[in-house]
Image (cartoon, rainbow, N blue to C red; front, side, top):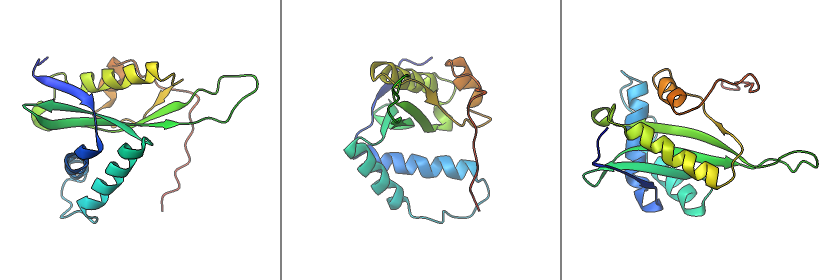
Length: 156
């Protein structure tokens, strides 16, 4: 594990770098696709707005002052329950570390920062739809499969 990695909360000013990494991340997933169908600036505005108003949170990992990875968290409110807990849950997504920084502890550090915040904020549960590549790291970090979650894909 490298000691030159610094993890910190993302700021709206990081939106450009985060959008660039998001495009890199998605292009890695769509190997062979010629060009993005959307402009990167769309993601930059989206990220800037959501980090700015607190609807989303994110953490970045830096090395030599450059952002080389990130993870996002969207707190999801629950309807009040007269008999049970209605603490919010957290949706974890957009977890990415540049290939050159993988297997150096960056991902584990990002997840530790996110989990620390989640505990302090009183979130009840964290949920994630991991990729095949990220699933082992999530499991090492304490995430477990759930028999309770169902999904209904509505994509065209």
